[in-house]
Length: 58
Image 1 (spheres, rainbow, N blue to C red):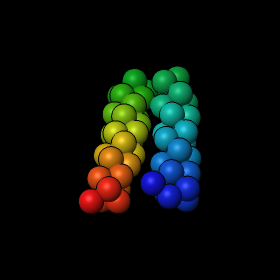
Image 2: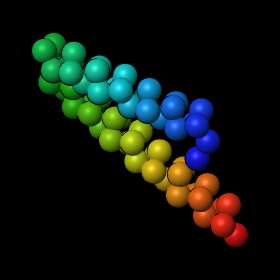
Image 3: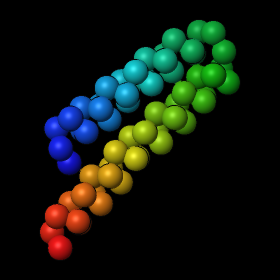
């Protein structure tokens, strides 16, 4: 994975984690939503990394 793409995933993950932390004090449902989005974003980063590695090897 290229450095700008990995930086993008890292920054968006940190922003979503921060939004989750802030949402905990306001509304539990929003916190749950942001938590799910955070997990999906991290998972998407791993998927993109694996696909790019597989593409470069073949």
